[in-house]
Amino acid sequence: MHQKFYFKKFLIITDMKALFSALLIMLCAWSTDSNSQDLPDSTEYETDEVIISATRTEQKIIDIPFSVKRVDQSEWTTSRKQSINEVIRNVPGVWFQPRYGNHDVRISIRGFGTRSNTGIRGIRILLDGIPESEPDGQTRIEAIDFDALGKIEIAKGNLTSLYTNAPGGVINFFTDKYFPVSFAMTNNEFGSYDLRKNGIKIGINSGYQRFMANYSYENYQGYREHSNEYQTRFNSVYEIDLNPVSKLALYGYYVTGVIKLPGSLTLETV
Image 1 (cartoon, rainbow, N blue to C red):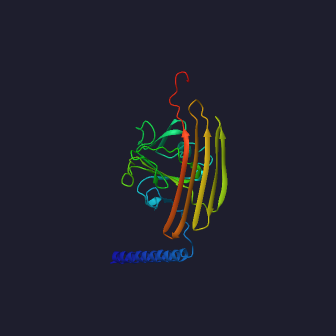
Image 2 (image 1 turned 90 degrees about the vertical axis):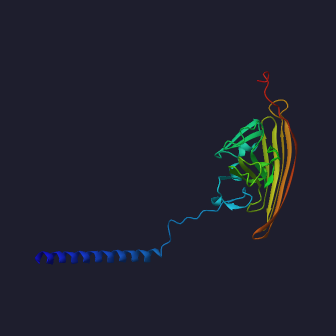
Image 3 (image 1 turned 180 degrees about the vertical axis):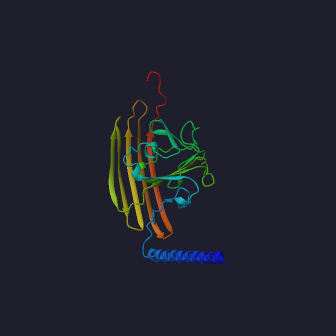
């Protein structure tokens, strides 16, 4: 009886400690909840949404099931802008190989396009969603004026379900039309071998209407015989917001010029 009495007493004391501990934990939890209602969540961080249009329909970049890279205008403002490899730089999985200086650039995305001896094959090239690629997949992009562009989107991977002749991916060039305020500017570049590139660019933004026009002239004598060129380009776009979900856009392009490719070096030239 003596041992049972102390054993029961020990059990009673142990249960009282457990009950007191449970009450103390509940009290602390209630105090924490009441205080947390007045304090903001310090881990909340909101980022800007990135909308991608290279997938034919505008989608959030986080919802796209394949790799997409967007290159904004600010990333090539200080470059020469003579060739695509000077504009799209440091994009993982994209490789460029110019054949004749600034022209006949071969593009490879994740290995696709490396079998092409000249030009661009297996990769879809678009300008404002309009195909620049020919039906056989061959593409020449010398007519694209980089001063008139606002962004470039590169979609990597097999996209033949969305575009024809696009097993390697899609590169979509977008005309600059989403600027915050109206502006007018001139572009003037000079370089070796009588390189001259002059142009003017204007943009008008009235809130629900946007208009941009860009004119440029380029003249280059070349570094050897039969390598000179000249080009005149004109790009324009007018866009109006009809309602919150509908837009009307009109694009105008004009390109004329002559590009001479000198071919391979001869032994005497070397």
